[in-house]
Image (cartoon, rainbow, N blue to C red; front, side, top):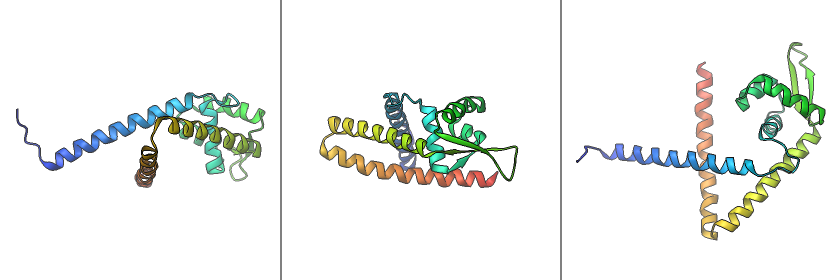
Length: 164
């Protein structure tokens, strides 16, 4: 059976196939990397909290829950443990005393950087054991392209937020 598919339709189909494969592959790799044991036995969500605080500086529990896409109650429990372990500090917002501001401590930054470095080292070992030097160079190029895609996605998200 012949279909009346023009060149633009074929390009869109190919692009959708590429997007599907990229989405599936990146999530699979991320899931597997996150399954590797961390030095301190930290879970993904707690590292996510520290990462967000490291990148944003100060945040609220509601903002962290939104970033992590989890319930605020779950964040509250994590924050209590992170504060107990002295990886974060909490203080009242001077402008809105109903709001608590959360910051990462130097100890939290040290832990986060150490954990991140461990994941990067493990991924480097996997890359070296799995890919040829030519494939490693292609991967470096692909990583740059993924950064460009992330910038495009950030632009789109910013436009959506400004419409609200």
